[in-house]
Length: 139
Image 1 (cartoon, rainbow, N blue to C red):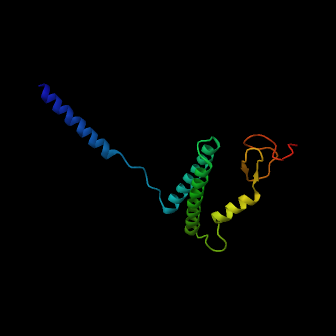
Image 2: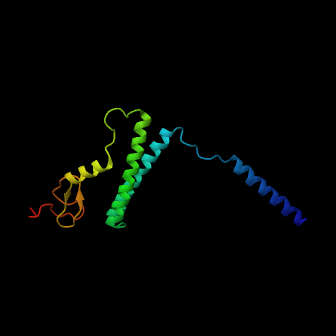
Image 3: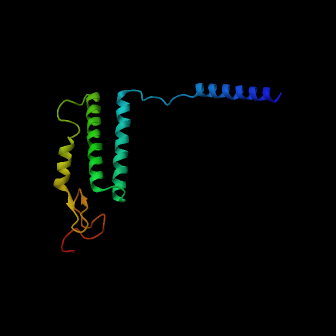
């Protein structure tokens, strides 16, 4: 009697598992290539934000940060170019400047803290990292 109960219970559990598995639906695929690219672009922006946070908290070295940032920016540029192509925005000037041009523009407008060496895109009076004055004279 105990063996029969065990077999019935095992068969019941097996059937339940199979029926539940069939009832599960996989997450919906994005509707179009355009939606997939927009989702990928959002994920890259999230990764860049997380990367900057990890660098500022000291979890990444400068070289790892720059390498990973460059790779993510290149991937983002490719995704944006593909999005522009799909949306029909390829006529005229590119919607997104090349990564090299963006990096060069950043370097041209960047200011560097004389105390800790942190770089900022815009000129600042006080360093956002160490809080010291950005001018050498300290005033």
